[in-house]
Image 1 (cartoon, rainbow, N blue to C red):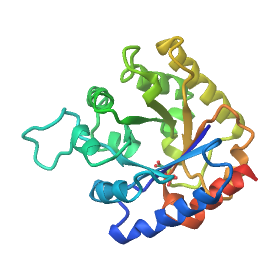
Image 2: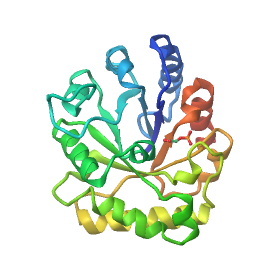
Image 3: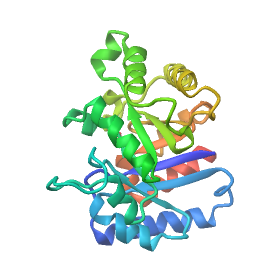
Length: 249
Ligand code: PGA
């Protein structure tokens, strides 16, 4: 099973639903769907409820991006908790994106976000990734292991967690890792997850960072990669559909 998860970030107004509608129509008509892949789109919070309602029982699934780190309700102006996100129909949530880490999300906060999301029956897409400096200094594995260890633990249910490896230097830059490096890193991440979760379940690890309809073919042979977290290219139905088509071509 492969995942194609679209991260809209700060994009979208109610009428942008037409983009999803086109993706949904494509997926519905594609025989490979159901057996081979899942499509999840995460619009901003303002659109989650209406989109989740519209796509209820349709092919594509709706998730949200980020949440507050405290549970349920609280005196936190402007904050949105996993309980609130779940209550409006989201099924997935992105946690730990480098955008949010750079805006102040700490490991302690991320741990609380993951736990609260899982408690509220959201599937978590947990993002990790090294920056350019880490890469140059050969610290990638160390950084990734730390990010995983400080947030995930064996008490959580790995069935509801997807890890997305997103090197920060590749997000929105058009740069993607060398296939060989990416393969090694993905295998390393899976090894770390297996060490934590033992035999719970095989970990699911996605790649994210500048994935588009042209470079997607380079990922085809990397069997260890269970799917993609797609930012910029998910805002266009044609690009998103072409990513799926070209992956299976
Ligand atoms: P990008 O973003 O595909 O635009 O590089 C990916 C992400 O930030 O999740």
